[in-house]
Length: 337
Image (cartoon, rainbow, N blue to C red):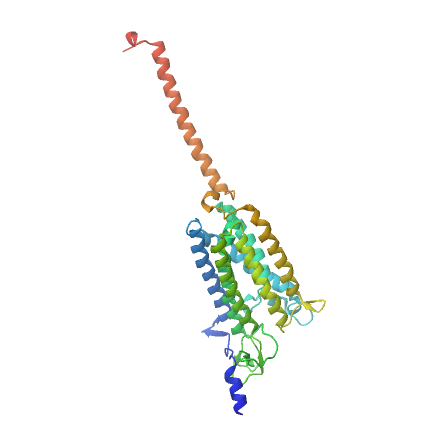
């Protein structure tokens, strides 16, 4: 009995629930963690962008485009790669829209989020690689914070373990007595499993990647998207081995989880970009590059201002010409009254 008690005290307890209700309104821990991660990424990204020569408020403007695109992309990737959860006999396709129940693929979130950021950067005349470098540490920090949502949802864990940091998994039930790991409540806190907390492994790994890329950026003054590439490479290394440990349901290719293959492919792509971009030289001057993004509004304003200056110059020249002609046609001695 004493050995069992010691084992239980050495493990990590799970929350008894992931959803609280404020009247009829459900407050979901997963959603709160995602929001907190986004806020942290914008705050840190703003500070880094201003330090690089950007204008305060521009990161928020970029986020207005990038965040919705990223959420849609993350959900699309999840639904595509885990389509068996939503489509087929006995499945509810509309559940694919229930993003609040978890299920965001980071690959889709980054890919489509980058499209949104590119659109916003084009509109503001901001070079995307420079913006990506400023945002990179905040993005991986946001991923770390988001993993706490998996803790509250009691999901994305690994196999059984006897290690001291094993995670206790409880049986959660609804008020009607139906078992529900997401919306239910753990009445009995006797663990039904003690497992590897792979979400925690990834959380800690992501914090390590954030520290790594900040250090490398300061040490080597990385630019031209190389900070972002280093973030992607560092993240995928961790995701590769953590993904292998996970036991949740996933799409398999040749008996291996699909995200293991994606991690490897994306890693080599990031490393290749990191090496190739070195030839572009030292970190770019954000202020000097402003306007290279092709902002049509700014270009129109500049053109209008230039035309106004030109018209003013023409008007001044015309007045001078008239005065000169008057001198020639009417000498001072015969100038009309």
